[in-house]
Image: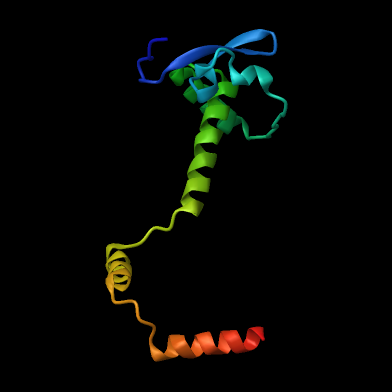
Length: 123
């Protein structure tokens, strides 16, 4: 379908017996939408002002509250997992790491001693 004014692509999916409009996701590219196979449920209690804010944001995106919540939680969860999987370095630390990787790589006396201690401890 055509993108909305906000530039978000949409697709119609089935939630139970009722269609709902949700942010396009990978499962929608298949013949059958993955939302129809949902088997788990999440319940949250939020203050009324938070619910009103979510309702307003969902309406602005042209989504149901559920569709908005699922899309937002999924995006944030992916971001958190990605942030934990990636080590970020400052430019100074990157330069130090790069210099160490480019060096001749011969172990120094302390590293050789640590290797000997390790081999001795394993015996």
